[in-house]
Length: 605
Image (tube, rainbow, N blue to C red; front, side, top):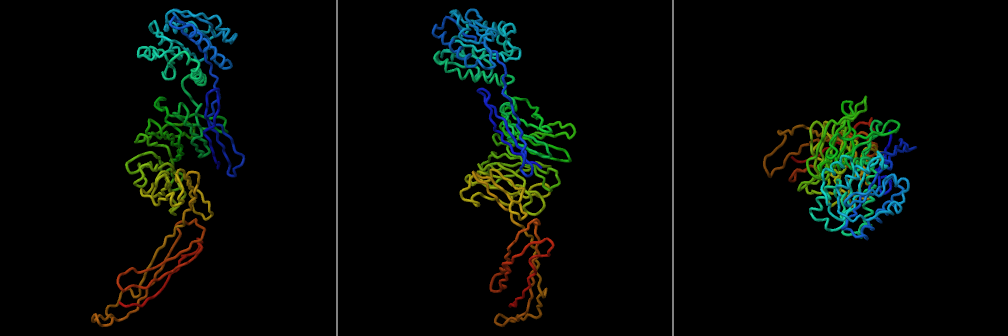
């Protein structure tokens, strides 16, 4: 067997962009020779960008303002001269004039020289005509446009267009040319001006339309423009991310030797999962066939759980932010083809509940078949309870924490436990780290006939363990024995601490009581009156205790104290009989440990 440890926050700087992938290590049972897996890794994309400055040269602009635009373009080109961005420049007024094209820039990328002969045109502002000119006369191979490059127009203007759109913008859209507008002057915030500018700018408008109050702010807008350019340069389709922010390894599973990792940040945080190929030669990205816009921000892969039923392999994958209500997808993996097929979708019921934020598969009877899938909705809210856990098997069941904790986050952690009550079946622990004024609590549920009992068998509060604990129950693990006595140890995470709880041995005690004689001989009893003495008779009472360990794997010692007391009323009470301080060691081949106790008491009837 292997141990897998993952860190999903490995940062990589690509120019001004920050990529986030993951790294995992696989250890053998002795924690030797770890295997390093760099998962969800996206190399820095040097996507090519061909950018045209389309700058206003109309008469409404002063010469000093025109020179400010020129200096701005020079600064941008200087900053990005050693990148994959190529530049061209077109001045527009009544007509559009090509100042230099991509061929000129490639031959000599000196911005001062390229713009040295620019003359202020000082005429009207035919913006739409100029956009058409750039699309048809500049973005062509003869002008040095690269076929594989993203095409961008940066429009710098201080006034409304003098002409009208006659299908020019639609034609530009069909050519996948992005339009970024820098408008100068508060008058461009007027409704009509905004309408025309938004018609030109690409989506989203908030990213591709910038209004500055004055020309003095133009230099300060360089960082915004640069960020937009890097975002375009660093993505494959100019507007979206695939694995650049994958955060792969956020969840992980290594059942049956198959390494599966959650990649919550893939595809603009729609998420997905990554399956490592054999010998870790590569990985396959798996996601839902849902519409991409529908899944945006869903966090698919936030949780993972391996399921097995009738020798078929399934994976439950949580997407707790799907449409704000959460969703869990059930995939089946074909044993022959290794293809993944979406078999079922389970949706949450309450907005903001984080349904699917925690998953736990439970094999109750140890037959290697999944009996239950527990799904946590830790932020589920009612007036009296906070958090909910859904149990899916043949029927859906809902579990809740105690009343009085509407913000308790019941279900923030869920884990299956090695048998703690001796019935040879798996039990379950559920954490509620914000209960009891954020001190936290853990609930223990026992199983019965391939399901869980609805009532918890024990509630362990953080305050009962240590008064200073906070968030007790935010993580739980309980499948191993740490004390060497054969019983399950449960590790519970709290803020800055891990508490280890040790389960106790359970002894089943059967009590047998016999009397001699079985019936009181009434004929021997003289009851002649209140003031006359009663006849004494002798009774023999035999009490036997037969016990067996329910937790048969226990190998430690147990100290027992047994007290017997008749709680009858009045003065007719049997004497106290006790068997105390009996210390014994359990060995499976021995018979009953607490031997039969015999005693007699003579009393009055």
